[in-house]
Length: 493
Image 1 (tube, rainbow, N blue to C red):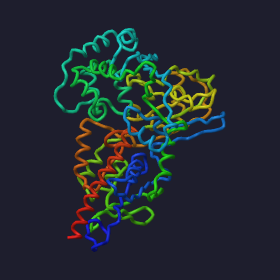
Image 2 (image 1 turned 90 degrees about the vertical axis):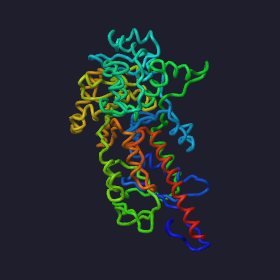
Image 3 (image 1 turned 60 degrees about the horizontal axis):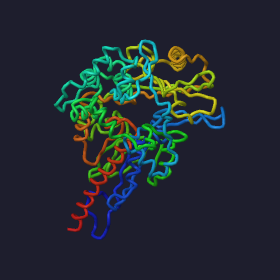
Image 4 (image 1 turned 45 degrees about the vertical axis):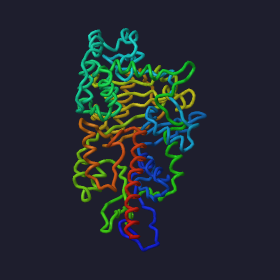
């Protein structure tokens, strides 16, 4: 019986069924939240995934045969940030606290390739802002002119209006063009695989604007933050990045068996239509249908636009306008004697260097447990807005290009023991200027019993996606609970 239709006196309606479309971490988190009690009322849910596996971009391969422990190769994210609490919270709910693995912060150093040379970020740099003078003044990363321009940041009046601006414009305005070239573009835009000249400040680094407004200066704001986050003597700070002992897939492997709803792999939703009596009918790739009172779309924006074309044409048009780029990684394994370890987590490469790759992570410096003793694992990033030509290469040519880059940048000339290429076509959302306004307009154009969530909207990281999934479940459950109460009142006169 549909929620909008009064039911016979004395007959209680069944709990609402919510269809969650997409089995990545966002959809899994939404299902997990729906499984919890919401104001004492349970919700039925069906989780539908078009592919044959759960987890979306979270995918870990464990490769044996080289030592006591396996290589741990990540196809997607290799860690999550701990400053946002939602991934840690979920891990603890699943009993994974003892499985958490922090980065080896003794080696937490990042290098920037500048004018053909690897130069470490000076100690005390917080994102792009120096908080310690001596390392900054003695660093070779910036010219004297660049350092003087950064020092002027203390005296530049803060911007007062609330309008968005590009990350590039913000960094140039506050810190100068050299900081944009050597830090902002490769480091901050690199986090989002974005073009700094188009990237929305408010959607990606809103804290910068908040610090500017509150303290009048990024530098003063970062100083204040550093004072507040000092730890007591003898206390160990939590690592900024964490993963799990045998890879990020542990999160998915722990979550899926705990889900008690209707879970379906290899089931694509081909169509979505509103039922005359309320709720929705989903047409499935196996020829069947599914009735649902509400829908959570945890899939790429283009897929959501396709399903919403008739139901919410304005939202669908706005969804189609959201940009994406294609990105990829190449992971390569070496014997330790063939690849002397970089004393740092990796290298970021400014666009101005003209290289064929974007960045390098020395995986076994970041997480030593990712390879057996006596071996090293390195990960190279390519594609996106910075090196789209590299993404277009065939695998053989791509591997040869990556090996040339490693030889020239890190001096690694040995052939890898094995490699893994992972490509993500049109899977990286681009948060261009005005992104938050576009997302708000999409949400306003949707029916109240449909939600769109995931990396295209309000954060690309694992914590953000978990948070979006759980919040969507709570909001949709509240909408359907209100509908059910109104239906109950109407039925009972």
